[in-house]
Every structure is written in C-alpha cells, then in structure tokens.
Length: 180
Image 1 (spheres, rainbow, N blue to C red):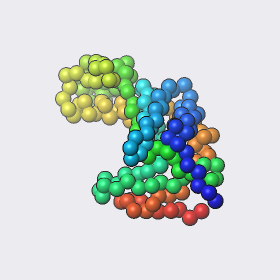
Image 2: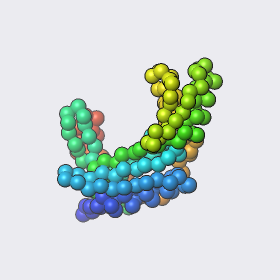
Image 3: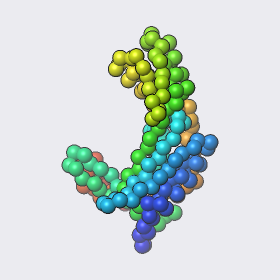
C-alpha cells in the first residue's frame, strides 16, 4: 500500500469541508501557512461552537504532535478513504473570538449564579473583554463563555473518511502504530 501526501492547502480544503458539515451555518476562516520547517492551519470564527468541539474535528487532520516535556515533534499516521496518508499541516490552531453580545449573556449568568456584579463588556478590536472585574470573577465568566456553545456536532461525511493509525511512539503519551 503506497502512502499519499496531501499538501497543506489540500488538508485545509478537507478541514473546511469537515467544519461546514459538522457546524452548518457557522462561518469559519481556514488559512493554511507553509514555512521553513513545517506548515500549519489557522481556524478562526466568531462565537459558535466551543473551541474544544472544533479542535475535536480539526485535530484529525494534524500531521504531527508536540511533546513539550521532551521538546519533541512527532508524526501522526492517518488514513483517508482507507489509504494511508500524510496530512500536510503539522498543527491546526483554533481561534474563537467572542462578541460583546455573546459575552454579556455569561456576565448575566455569573451574576445570577454567583452573585457577581454585572460587569461592563467592551470590544477591544480583538474580541469582547470584561471591564472592572477581579481576576477570579473574570476567569469564571470567560470559562463559562468559552466552554458553552449550544451547538450539537453533526456527523461529517468528510471526517468519516479519516482514520487515525497511531503515531511514531516516541513522545510522552504517544501510542505508537495501531495494528490494522
């Protein structure tokens, strides 16, 4: 069985398709970047599903993993339509921006649930932030907002074509090749 290599741009097309199928109606920006020593994809979106939900989808298309304990970048092995494939993006980064209206909902929830004062929410151009809060209150509100999505993941036809075959087995927590 020969191994197929997909470029970073080809991998980004698959990521776009899987996200569109998994979260219809949510607009994602998927940009690929190739540089000396690797390649990556940046996925950005506003409000929508939680970053963990999106990472679960796009993580299947990463060609590498990083072990920070040993400063090691290892390889992931995957299949596409039953054929072994190497995805061209080493890593896929997920960036979720929260709007002021979205974050204000969680300020109200935290105020009702924990008795926090109603904070001012402002947009600094990069996303919504809280004004006049202490660190613990801000952390609680932001955690509520980032962990909530209200989105159910719909089964993606594109994602169903992808299989995880294991990794190189060298990093901390690595699994090695999975027997077929």
